[in-house]
Length: 562
Image (cartoon, rainbow, N blue to C red; front, top):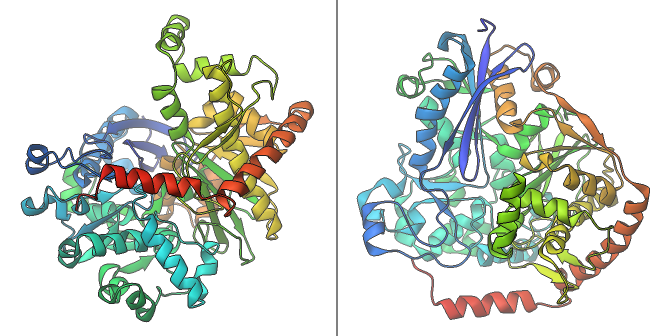
């Protein structure tokens, strides 16, 4: 048992959330607990609410929804369980920090009530939280991008020239144009990162990180009303009305823990609750990557790549650059890949014969581990394959979620483990595109630090080092985002003066550094050249077959369910 001050970091992921109790003096993780979301991700039909269940409301392609109550259940279950596991007294906890997937956004009333909790809207898909990987707003993002360039809007360059369908404005425009009644009923359109802090404190404070990267908030303002009216006259006051809220700086306290939230969590009322953060961005301090030139790759269902620098430059195809978006005093640049672990999971679930699962079980391995071991038994390049990692679209640098996956080189002799390895390699090639784009813009990457669940795959990490031609170190924690949230909570509680100081005391690096293998790196250079040809042919206007196929699929499945 420790009487040292502790903070709690709560990381809200795609399928579950985890709470970690951390000692503020040295970052020791004393206890943790995980809560699986009851409704997981709703991407085929609504599974929440009696009306939705009885009517079997189907969802169109590219939708991904969640139930906000699942997030509150985390506070009721995982937080007190983590405190019990840590063996600390609740009075030893001085602050709480949270992070969230982004852009995950939901329409609410002025008091924070989600529209999906109103009985009359329980069977309306647009009333629920749209998860980060809800990509059905791509046509709306296309329109935003087209108009921004027509009007030479200055903010579009801060997003690499293209705004993603994952962002607030594309999803807000989709809500307006597909369900205007719900749009009018929504008094606020809130990032889940900010909504959960609202539930903890009773105060609505917008995260500077989420607002900047996902909400087009630059230089103290949103896109102006004239631009929004040109998109749709009814959209003119979207920023003014639906995004209204004070912007909170990272590391500041959004407020104190409310009595109601104290009852949920078992923690003392009034302790500091940090301004919300995005799961990827909050991980950088946990990996002790708070200086210019350090690239942090947070590798999970998707990958987010972050770089900070003293300079403000335009980087094509980036997700955004925000002053203080990662660390105060530096411009934080974000890039990403929409599908990484999700692609591997799809492959295992849908493309692998059952005998592989039987073999893996007999060896005491997961199917992923078994495929990895088999796939790397032959020399690099022996599978004769190259793949595009676009099964969930492309976040950077093409910023097009209408793109889709490709595997070239398959024959009747191709085995499942070879296809699996080709997909692992494809995600490394996608990361290399991002790194080279940063370098070409004048922001060379001097160090790579990997975090997230995929760092456990040592073969994958070695592949990334070989493909990038750079050494890769890993974060010292298995719960990087939760640790990062705990670090921000320590700053909000006044234990450490700023995020850099807290990161130095509480962050960590793993003992292993992956260095490039000269022979494999040379072979990967050849494969990467083939990847780039496919990347540009399908992604830069050489061939729009992917868009045509997606349009054909939409027509075949019928109109969207409003």
